[in-house]
Amino acid sequence: MNNTLLQIFDLVTTFAMLLVFIRFMLQFAGMDARDPMIRPAYQATQIVDVFGRIFPTVGQGRISIAAIVLMFLIRLIDISGKAALTHKGIAPIPLFFQGSLSLILDFLRMCRYLVIGSIIVSWIVVFTQSNHPMIGIIIRLAEPILAPFRRITPNLGMIDLSPMIAFFALYLIEIFVTGIAASLLPMLG
Image 1: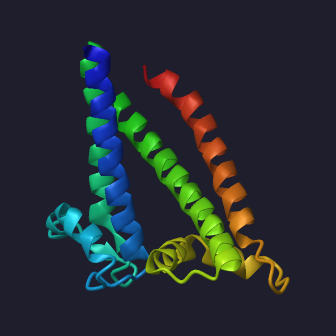
Image 2: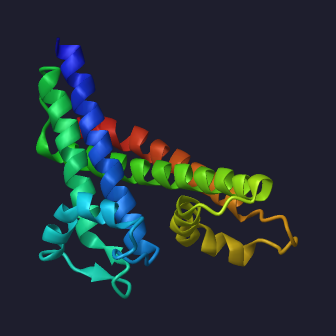
């Protein structure tokens, strides 16, 4: 029973984290909440607007500090809830650092998945000539991640290397942060 409860708890927190991440990326990409395809995501994450009254947005309103704080709180709830369900305690300082590091890793992982999604969607567009609105949304969500890499990759005409370079860069950063976490967390207890 406890294992089932743990899996359900993990599923709920993972889903909440994914929703808030999508909301963060929608705002980061500058996508309008009035768009009928995007409106449900904004409505499902209205809690970010509540937190937005406390925490400002930066970067001309594109970077939502409220969404980042909410993702951090969800991560803290996830870690402490799992510790409680497995009858283990966690001290506040290790909880803070473990929550911070796992939030960074989750964020990098979700960015990588978004890049993979944009690669797959671009292939769908090329092979099927499909023009579904969801395809445009995925491409626009990945654009803020890919834009810096497009500036440094050579222009090869029809071949865009920026998604592959972005994927590997995010993966290397994830490995680096994992290494830091592996060396720091044992010191915290």
